[in-house]
Amino acid sequence: MRRSLPLYLSLLLLTQCSKCKNDPRPLDPAAQLPPATQTGAGTFGCLVNGQPYTPQGRVGLGPNFDVSYDPGFNGGDLVVRTYRVLAGEKKALAFNAINITSPGSYPFGPRQGEAKGSFDDDNRALPCNEFEASRSGTFSKGTLTITRLNLQTGIISGTFDYTLAKPGCDTIKVTQGRFDDKL
Image 1 (cartoon, rainbow, N blue to C red):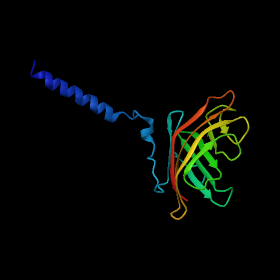
Image 2 (image 1 turned 60 degrees about the horizontal axis):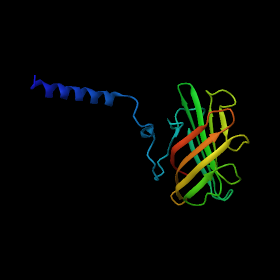
Image 3 (image 1 turned 90 degrees about the horizontal axis):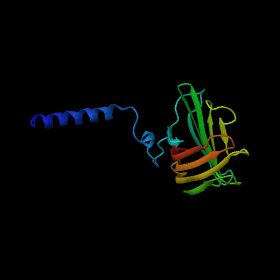
Image 4 (image 1 turned 180 degrees about the vertical axis):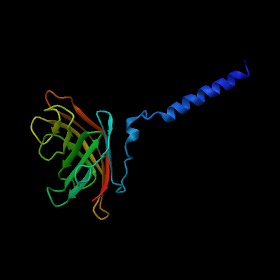
């Protein structure tokens, strides 16, 4: 029996490890997000209420991830748009900010000149399916951090976290966000 004990313990450990490798759900939802890079990799990801969100699927001819930046409009106008179509569900997440001139932190908020976020989910009931911070009745708070803005190489990268809330609806918490794209 003593000789068999190490064999049984080894088999038990091996079967436990194989279960971990075959588990389709990673322990950390953030592990499903792309890395935060500054190379123009064309990546976007965040957690929405703790669940991974990355652009996926197709609707029409437009891309599911788009970044535009106009240094001559509103002191530097940044718009980031994404959508996700998966198993019949359509969601869209976007944000925009003005006066973006260099790397740094910029607040999300209700005041003029602050970044504005949005989140749409076709599977939520009205009026909780659309959160638009630029409309009255939707509260927005958070931070957009531009980590790289290089017009010579055409690369813009950043991180973001923001909360959207409106009366009678569950709060939308966007966390651990990152994007990296070529302009």
